[in-house]
Length: 488
Ligand code: HEC
Image 1: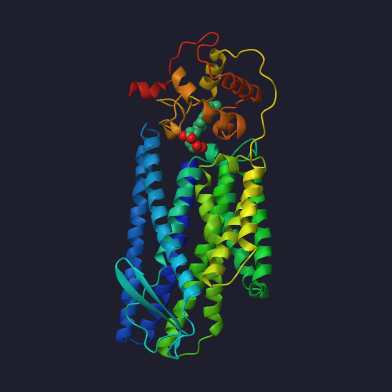
Image 2: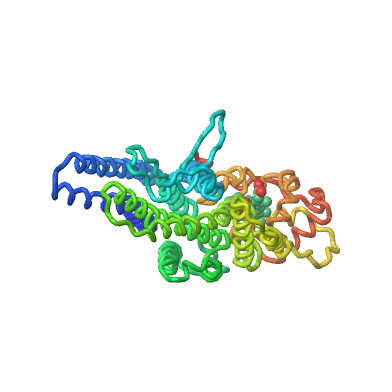
């Protein structure tokens, strides 16, 4: 059923992601080899052999978890397995992502901080001295290319590719494998999980195509207008996502959309341009100077995307952002404000004075905090609420997940370690329950257990009255357990 569908999608996606590069290389080197069999061409053949073997290796690594999925399917270990898979892929994703964004920040810093005037050789665009980790470093940037391209040339591309591949894998692990609870929110739009997954994936490619086409119009040379139009288009996507997905999934898709554009820039524009530059430098052919400039502009776009994308990646921990009734609006403000902060940093590195950029950006971010602030819950709580009533609500709406042995199919251990098996456990969590159930209404997750507004009101009153667990009749506190867990 859903599994087959998901696996086919995974395989297609991985195929596209990992093979497209090597197919191109393969084709070129085969043709070259055919034309003449010199030593240099043999090296090229070795190159593609390496790419191919790396791709094969990556495939095998990805097939292993898939095989486990089959083996553990419908066993009690599935949830545990998914949690570990989630953790490992996430770990990898942030590590490689840090390497990518770190390098990106470093090179933008270099570009902004180069000495471009004092004591430069003719062929140089600039240089920079730095001290780091107990050593002195000296970097030179060439105007075009050195006379001889060195054999050892670092490319910085796999960081981007692997960040994307691991990110898409996470999207599957966290959102698509559990599309019914994580991706679809029936109160937003009641669509079939497959349809939701398809919309998600297609939107990522559509976003890239729109952005790429836009970058091939004259608009590219007008940064301000490009920024304005680009932002409006991004907001359309954000709005669209919040109309079809759960708020959390909408946020993560917005991040994945921008991330895909960033990796697309690296894969389809920046790296090909660099390859052409190296080729022209080694073979002495004509080089269109626009290639390098275009790549530079795309790289600059990526630089502005970084802070918004990083926000989205941590946003899932902050329900006041995606829990706001118009989640796309908060997303828009934070995107705008954080890109503004990046703009300020860029200007600062270049030594340009900017009076307004930072205050306006901060004002926008404060605006987001202000708008999303909770409203004071109204309605008076006259009668004292009996704890048994609260306990019953928690038991029907929450312990499916928040219990030492959850009955939920996705969460086989209590999420964030939060469980409500005993009265005390409920009492000590009252502050957080108030936040998530009453104020942001982000629990139960996507309201999967169908909590009613009256029930939220009752819980609010109970907490406002002091979370008294002796109030009224206390129901016998027995944890709800799933039958198969017990057998085990
Ligand atoms: C479908 C499973 C599910 C149900 C049902 C559910 N939760 Fe949660 N809950 C989660 C998950 C997953 C997390 C962790 C992710 C997050 O914070 O959004 C969580 C986190 C929380 C947190 C935050 C804990 C922390 O460490 O910050 C609170 C509080 C909470 N839930 C309360 C509730 C209450 C109260 C109910 C019932 C009204 C409820 N949940 C129902 C899955 C669920």
